[in-house]
Length: 421
Image (cartoon, rainbow, N blue to C red; front, top):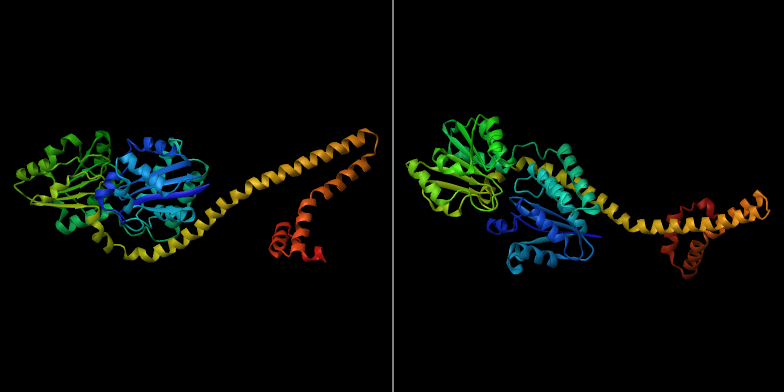
């Protein structure tokens, strides 16, 4: 069994490509089952976030081209269109890549904690869809353990750096005093919750939470003395917002250019600061053309994020050492599976030999031979038959001067020098 990952992220593809290759919650199960039906693909997990889409497969006969072709077909895109933005890793490098991703070492924000939860959710979804099995199950459980160790043993997560933190930091640069500002947060996921927390800590005047599920909006808004609305109510409240931060899983924009234009008129063209963290984008890109709107996407936050990363670099080096150690551990387990079949066959062979000799010894006892004679026959025959084939092969290796086989036999049978003297 071999492992492969194929994907793209914020380093290899612009947001315009990334948003066309996402797997929202409404299609990911169908995608997993479609992929696992491809010849040679035994197990599959799909990780899809704002900054990356990655496909992990355990396979017997697959390759980058086959998975790339499936990805293009599923999203209705030509393979030539997406291939330049994709990367792939096989076996050991696949394992290393996943461990780095889950530990926050491959994120736009170095060490950001949200990615581990997203990796866990991706695995759970594959588990529920029955597309993950023995190999990916072991790999992802190993990954969760390593990511936890990285968090515990290094300082990579100690600084409050995340996409949400970067968005709020940028808002504070634009509005020196947040206490007079109203923030409209669109969505109710982990990123929006973090943004709400950071805004609340910095004394934002008022928080409005808009979400498709009103109950979730109420739950989040209640934590920060905010006000909850449904997505359809956004046009009625957008004019109140000085700050808009959006992160939903909607396949289509939830805020259009016309809605923003109407809000600006009501505000008498008082500026609005908008951050669209979602992929696909929640806010129509044409909104950036409007005067009095400052619209940023996740890619635009990169510069802000870089300023907050210096304290994590040393911790990242320690984390890489932990990852490399555990890559070797997992690959050792994977290689050991190659020997399992051989060990089982050897044991079956020995057990069959034992049963045959035991049957003959019992027949001798039944024909009148003493227990001592029958047991002696059993012991003598087994000690002759069990080492017969290995002894023959070792003798032949010595005759042919195959020293590597002799060394391997010495290691395998743990033959001490005292024994051979």
